[in-house]
Length: 260
Image 1 (cartoon, rainbow, N blue to C red):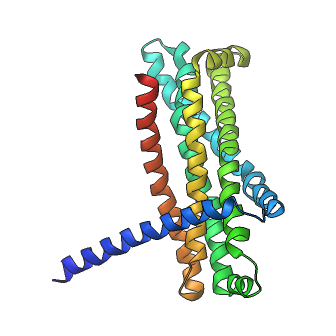
Image 2 (cartoon, rainbow, N blue to C red):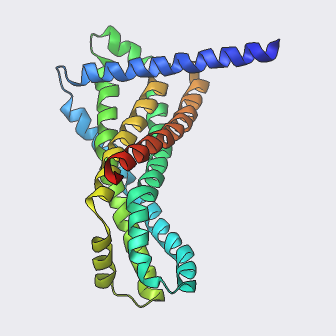
Image 3 (tube, rainbow, N blue to C red):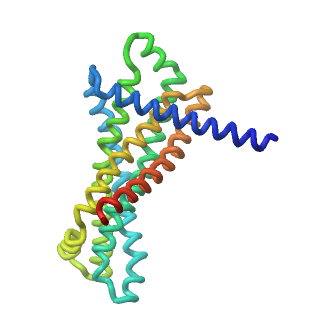
């Protein structure tokens, strides 16, 4: 009987946590549009999340463009279709590979960082002290971080996609003697608004998911210092799963509105 009871308890725990995260998100929307607004803290979080992630995103994007082009080029050469390389790489990176890969990288860095930071503040009773002093820790700590991730992640994805295309162009320049001007002319000819707009829109949802789960796990951290590590780890796991779900929904909706 332990098996069914364990499955039942885990199912109850899972749906309970979904309900708690939903309530947490609703509270964010209620607090985000009410005074006072923490603009200074929002700018500080945008700097911490955006500027300090540029190097990691840039390196990831550059290697992504290099590897994707190096792996795809031999197959296209077998069919004499090397001229399709710029359009294929650009559409693949801008539509799907770039946003998902960069969002996963940011989930590992940003989501875990937020979970650990807020978790340590909860364990050391700093959040409780803010509540006792009459301030609103949810608005100062949670709202600013979720808004910062929502605003910064699309910019990081655009930056990473650009660096990835430069990496791909470098391979084509060395292997196929294709100039950068010719490569990017082919890229801009291949890309359409139906490629760019859905990818940009879903990147805002990616950023919201990263900030939401990271803040939720850290804000309700328990079990002392051990809970800080658990909050950081579970923030990355939950966020990664949520990113794939959001991506699937975005692709499904895009096919309905742009393919009909």
